[in-house]
Image (cartoon, rainbow, N blue to C red; front, top):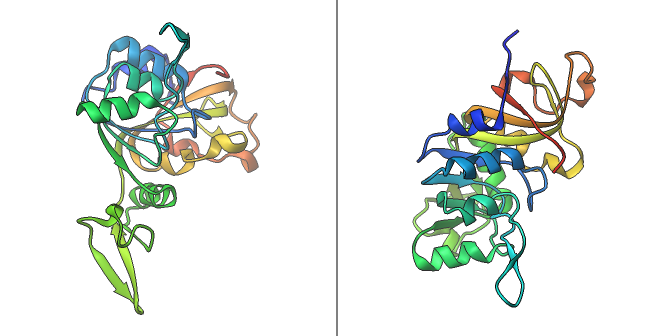
Length: 231
């Protein structure tokens, strides 16, 4: 059996500048924080990041002193590691808007349901998905519109990434993953839609300890495991 266990530093080192990266999590719930830290430490640059949101930016007091560190993708945003952000909302992190308005960050907003279906299509090898969401709005600008049985649909192209960075609650040494509660979010779909999948494990167990009924991402999708902790 291949030893899939690596360090967060090793994971960050294999992600080159300019890579396209899917990051699991919803408001940083389920985001692999140790890998985010390692990417910041490596000073990664020019990443295209596909995720639910921009994470949380740092908090400041009235004197401008940082009182709370960023979380999730907010760490990459603060470090200016991201060239393009594809997300469903950005309101939790004012640094996203600041960088976007300054012209240093390209932001593409995608309706949440559309985005997860586009990722699922990328993992399944489909040519895209049809959705009425966004028809007649800025979301649909420049996209192909198909009329089916008298109703217009946008053709949304599939999403695929070079890397998917995920976090599992329980992961066995083979790479089978269980996500606890809402940490499941985008992660199951993302695991199928990237060339290399790296999972940060809150708890690593021996093969056979994870009940097959609880496996949400099978080991065949997982290339590497980073042993982390509950952040």
